[in-house]
Picture 1 (cartoon, rainbow, N blue to C red):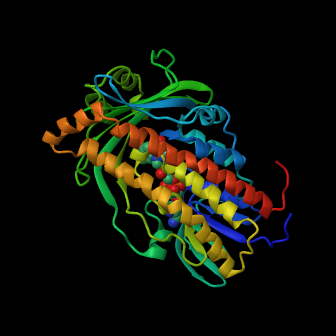
Picture 2: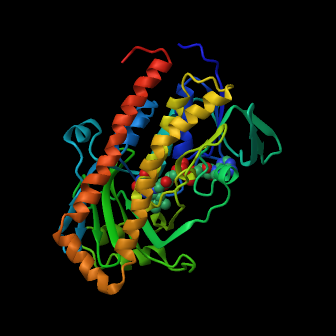
Picture 3: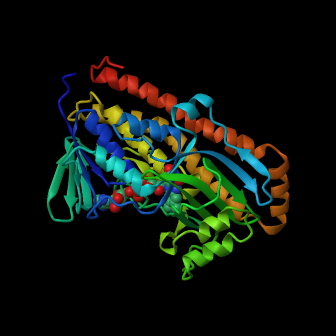
Length: 412
Ligand SMILES: Cc1cc2nc3c(=O)[nH]c(=O)nc-3n(C[C@H](O)[C@H](O)[C@H](O)COP(=O)(O)OP(=O)(O)OC[C@H]3O[C@@H](n4cnc5c(N)ncnc54)[C@H](O)[C@@H]3O)c2cc1C
């Protein structure tokens, strides 16, 4: 074990980014606290899919990923069933990570992350109200009136991040003027294919379903997504609205929605913020949606948040956190490769939302002809984007080797 002194790291927010950061920083040998404003780390939402890189990072951070979800092959189709995209992943990745895209329910990810956290790391009912820093350290002013001192702070506090605002000022949210209804069913009598994630687009609506595994049971999750003016309040019945949007879609989507308990249906508005040029300042950095708020259209926000947390811990291994210059170098080395990757995924999600749901009526016909008869979408969404995501596996391998060296480990 290298003789670097233990530093003190505070992570704000116990979502996927915060829990992953806490795990990775703990493995790096530093003292870490995870401060969550609510009485527990709660999964806001139900439906989720994870790509292989976050699954790999979770495993390396000691999270049990065994039977976490259902491996799925992903396709895009039109409403007549014509395939527009087959998401291609290398065979070895599919073999090593139990399939391409893993379908699960969000609370299961939280349970597994929480189970891996060492006792005492998570502190709940601990809202941070204000922070300040200088070259010697960071002071967090807590809602209870006390002050928490640390060497490094990680803002993993979501799309409305206090840390981001403190470091870089206010920036408006970018409304996508889309809303999504999502739900799931674990009913046993569903007659639908397993191990598939199928995203179907009509002229204006996306309807999708994917198989899931949840606590040892097979099931399905689904979502329907359409244009909606973000300024207009939605007062309708969620299950009825989802049923109506899915009416023009092929089986099994309408059947899955019909089989879903209305209490399991949720709705979200889609929004993000434009990418930041710089995340870290002094002894503070950002992770997850705080750094790169990502719309659900990407289906990768929690995945990127998990990767961020993993990379932060790996970069802080072997660093003397009292040394201001060393901290700055480590945090910069963390964010530099993360920025282009995360910005690309968030921006692609924004653009796809525009193309599929905000195209003027006359252009919709032309768009669909192009998507049905050219390889454009296959190249962008079926090959280029998953290729970018899978590259993260190599980055993780490289980071893991450096991490072992920093800790003076020669095993494995
Ligand atoms: C419908 C939907 C579907 C999605 N599907 C997918 C998918 O398939 N795959 C995928 O990878 N991603 C998906 N996402 C995106 C993903 O959910 C988010 O990107 C992810 O939750 C971001 O994680 P985070 O940890 O950065 O932030 P959050 O999950 O928002 O967590 C932030 C935490 O910080 C806490 N906090 C905030 N302020 C403070 C404070 N001042 N003091 C203390 N605590 C604070 C909050 O209470 C919260 O616990 C989806 C999102 C939605 C809405």
